[in-house]
Amino acid sequence: MKGEVKKCVLAYSGGLDTSVIVPWLKENYGCEVICMTADLGQEEELSGLEEKAIASGASKIYIEDLRGEFLTDYVFPTMMSGAVYERFYLLGTSFARPLIAKRMVEIAEIEGADAVAHGCTGKGNDQVRFELSVKALNPRLRVIAPWREWNIRSREDALEYAAAHNVPVTQSKRSIYSRDRNIWHISHEGGDLEDPWNEPSEEMFVLSVSPEAAPDEPEYVEIDFRSGVPVRLNGTSMGPVELVSALNRLGGKHGVGRVDMVENRLVGMKSHGVYETPAGTILYMAHKGLESLVLDAETMHYKDKVALQFAEMVYNGRWFTPLREALSAFVEVTQKNVTGTVRVKLYKGNCILVGRKSPFSLYREDYATFGADNVYDQSDAEGFINLYGLSMKVRALLNIEGAGRSGAEEPDYEQFPRD
Image (tube, rainbow, N blue to C red; front, side, top):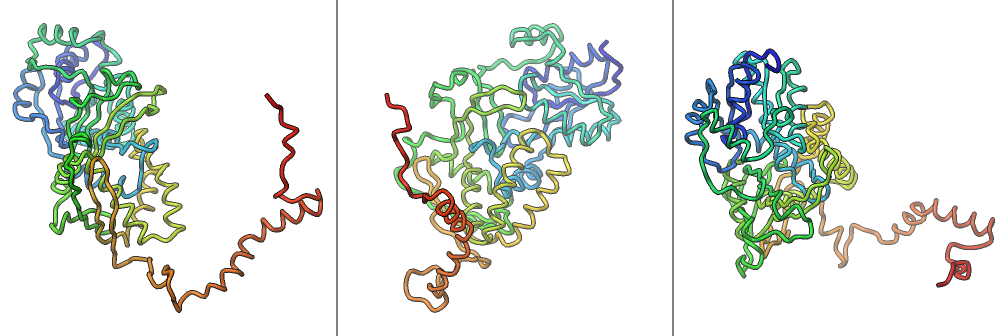
């Protein structure tokens, strides 16, 4: 026995790894095992999971639809912050983990469990996200990570262990890729993607067609936002799950939302992955377009700085922290007037912003016009430029008076070595 544990709540997917973890926990910790499965829109078959979990040795299983909470409390606040990790990643896996961990902790407290467990490997980011969330919510719970303890190292080892412990395993063709899917995205890693020079095969993609195979005619989509939250699609009011699902279909149909990137994992290594985020790509584009209309310059520019910090915190598993809560409070204030309609054009892998309007628009056509106007005296610009450039003027005068040369003098190229 590895230690005294009475009852453990396991994040359970029903796949080979987590199915094997059930008897492994009982064998190595002598504890009762309660499984918890979160439906985040992964589109995997959830029926039959209860029977499978019980047959594997679990005493009970919680199967819960968390899609609405996922989008409302995690996805949309991150989208409204503008957070993007390392220029491309819309954080689809990252903000799913704190929600799963939160529900695990709640179930552990309901059931009187003294431990929780997950099936994350010791090389990935998810182990950090799960365990930091547990520490933040209930540090008295022990966290068990079998992949860091057991001697199972391959699928063949896991199948052998499953057979020896009468664990029901559904035999199916296994993808060469490691995937994570929810209603926001799907990620692909491993296989031929381990060489970042390789172009992903078209057979790998799940949510989107290739741009070459997308329709030859563009499709226009209108999205209404209320205080930063998307609430209507093409004039029809929709809840978060319905709206994101519909945008995934529309974006995927036009090849929108594919990203191929090499990212820096929190654990210190680089990884090459491909993401499909059709709805997310559309919503980010539309939301930024509306913000450009209603946010003043100082707020928008500072918010861009906050977005970088927000993305790092989400990626690194620091959702349940005072700083993330404070950043979210700032973002929420910025969204008060982010209300209006945005029109985008979907075409051959592109999401193109083509229109935006809002009752809180700060854009004034009578100010911005190149035609005749009565609200902007162009002669005022001279005084503004004189004041705005004063520090530059003083520096240049000092150079001329002191060094005897201006900043426009041609450099002495003779001082540079020649080949």
